Length: 259
Image (cartoon, rainbow, N blue to C red; front, side, top):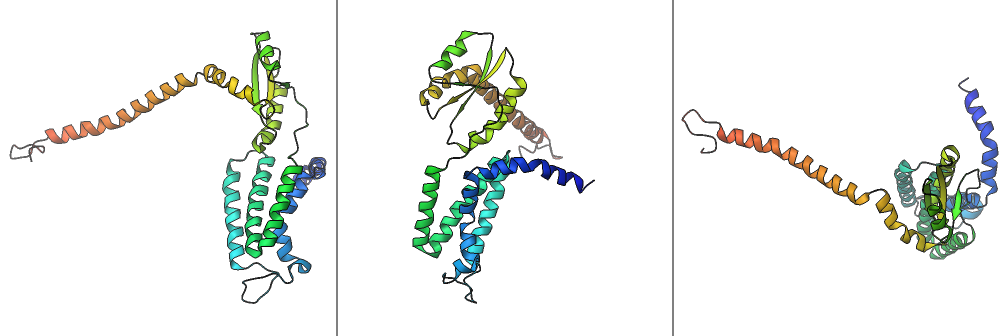
């Protein structure tokens, strides 16, 4: 049973994996992330490359390249501690791997570094992260329709996400927000979205609404007051101990304070 469960999970994950591989963004990102590894390890490509190894083998990493790759692994592990979805994990791996690849290629040869940097720029301009296309119960607003819809019925509570298509964090949050809309949408609670990349004035317009609806100023003042009281509560026992020590008398009649 312990072996059968992972096999069944892998079997059910095959359709999702095929859809993931069908999107050009992920295979191309993986190829760019592993570019230096392929160039350094594949014999047809690595022949003639400069190396600092003592044995002069151009098809293996030298000590400096190993240091850079180890540093990359440490950064990815620290960043992925805060990641929630698989897309966030992959996004961190792709981003920092490309940075490390650029450093390694520039260290190897300036021309190879410029070529790799050009490929990354072209990829960034032509291949965008895939948008979430799954089921959802979300209404998309423009800068003109959002105010009309929010004011149409005061009995309806709206949860509106201000997102940008170019943001990896927004794309990673999209399936989570869609799942919430499917579970909690009803007549009195609706979900909406506004693309601030297309309508940047909307986020500025509703900034004060967010502060007012969540009472951020009141919460901020209350938190400051509680923090101040907590600090004063910690100082008070110390002051009482000082007074007690000062009032304690020595055998000759002198107090510790007088002493």
